[in-house]
Amino acid sequence: MKRFSKTDVFGLAILALAIVFRFQDLSLRPFHHDEGVNGFFLTRLLREGAFKYDPSNYHGPTLYYLTLPVVALFGLSDEAVRGTTAFFGTLTVLVLWRFLRPLGSVFALSAMALLATSPGAVFFSRYFIHESLFVAFTLCALAAAPARNAQQRWRFMGAGLVLGLLFATKETAFVSVGAMAGGAVIAAGLVEGRSPLALARAMGPYLREHAEKFMHGFLAFVAAAGLMYSSFFRNPQGVLDAFRTFTFWTKTAVHEHENPWNQHLLWLKEADPALIYLGLSGVVLALLLRRSFVGVMAAVWTILMFSAYSVVGYKTPWLGLNMLLPLAITSGYLLHEVAGLRLLSGRLSLGPAAVLIAAAATGLSATQSYDLERTNYDNEVHPYIYAHTQRSFLEFVDVVEARADALGTGKDTGIAVFAPENWPLAWYLRDYTKTGYWGEFKSDVNVDMYVGSLAQDAPLALKLGSGFDRIGPYNMRGVVDLVLYARKVSP
Image (cartoon, rainbow, N blue to C red; front, side):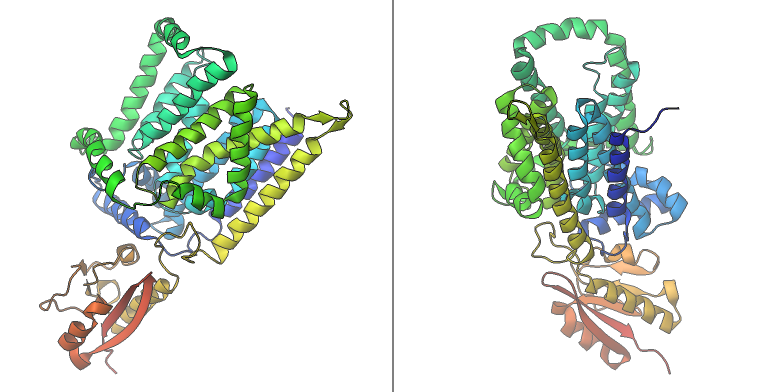
């Protein structure tokens, strides 16, 4: 029976920490606007059995289909759906450990610990959005890559499978794959002295030798991506739409969520200081020493990711998760090199210093993560809080539910939502079957409750008169406030 090493024990302890951070009290934070939209699509898939991919506005279908088994087991709840993204966030930490372990315990454990406690990695693993799955598939594709283990057939099929899932998750997959591939090519040149021309010449014989395995990998890719985009053959048009999406995405990248070119760097500097400072130091060191293939590859990967997301105007904080992954690797590489240094003619090892730095950086990140998850999860001053729903919105939902019960209509209560900005309300009212969403005031709609904006307050009061109670306003986010008009309860 194989005994656990110290590295295994520390790795399992860090993995347990990652699990606690990602799974504890998943319903505490109210749903974000985007989570509400994703929850709506998931609910429709669950109840109607269909998902139609829309290339003009939304991302791929993996998030919804991979959440279905969780919902089948635990029900349609905040904890269940966010449990999917928390699982993939934890999986990323585990795969990172296994991927880096052959390179040294300090390398693997440092990178693992920093990603496990990173405020950004934790925060967005607890979001029901695509990014957590996207980053997990990115790392799994790298870990399964058959470049140095070409005799292992499963690597070709495994890489094809996760690449298919990656491309079926978000249309930006080509950015991440291109950055990793570029990093590998440059690392081959800087570390192994293999020029791009030499690599290209070697590719022909390599492809011929492993042609059958490449075909298996390609078929795995097509099967994974095809099944997802076609909604398991229920929407064949989705496969064509997967190619059409790039036309829409280029327009979105230029015109929506515009921020300065260095916005991601500013966000990470303020919210994830341990990873950004150690990671960028590791980038510089890897490129100076040029002796670690993985170190140099991750360094170039980091540079290309920052460059790609700096060029486009579209910037949101959760995109930074794609940069935190290679930064964790370069951070681990930096501490690995520090641990290997010896001073005073070899009598003094800096190994303990590297461990102390890793422990201090992990402690800082863990403290910041805890504060963000327990206290400041809706504080709009924080860089990661991007138009997030305020906790007071949950009080509004409670009032709607309490009044529906008081009226005796329960889940059959008629509710008209006139407020133009109302996400994630549809998620919280998913069981109220007689809810309609107009996005504007309608004088001819007659129901038990009305949800309006402050701008609609006066016409609602005029329409409803004394037969309704005005409740609120409740702040949903920023300057968006909602007012509830509920039919008075009979004495």
